[in-house]
Length: 89
Image (cartoon, rainbow, N blue to C red; front, top):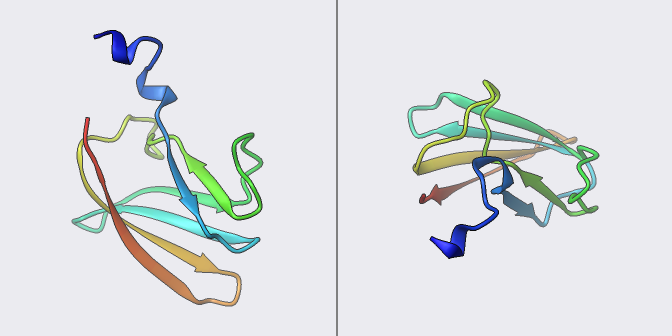
């Protein structure tokens, strides 16, 4: 498929927006298993003051599968926001 030319599992990403200057993002499966943890700011080239990219690779260095995932954003003051997203491959 020519639409996917140049794309690999390692070139896909999800961007978290509207983040505070410092926070911790945790991604979970629907069963509550921790998939990955991202500290913001990470130093990643695509990160900005209020956004953070995630490469869709688990902490076990495996590409995640299609499905629904939960995430939490924990602020330095202890506040937590939660949400969910869907990955379709």
